[in-house]
Length: 83
Image (tube, rainbow, N blue to C red):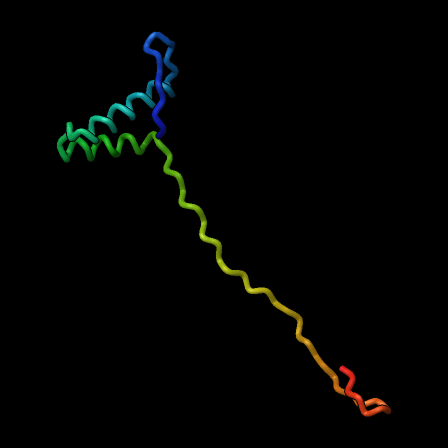
């Protein structure tokens, strides 16, 4: 979730308020404020409201079918080979 600056005097939407709370939890956790148990619970709560970015799909190689090449060798009257 990206960090956004919000003016405290502005009206907050639920979405903006939730974003601020999640940022505050992440900031406090980065400073070691919570115990392991608290951090685990808060992490679960944050994940309920944030959507993970799915990894980019890895392209799978495609087999391309090429037509079979058939060659017929024939000799003409001048003894040259024609393909």
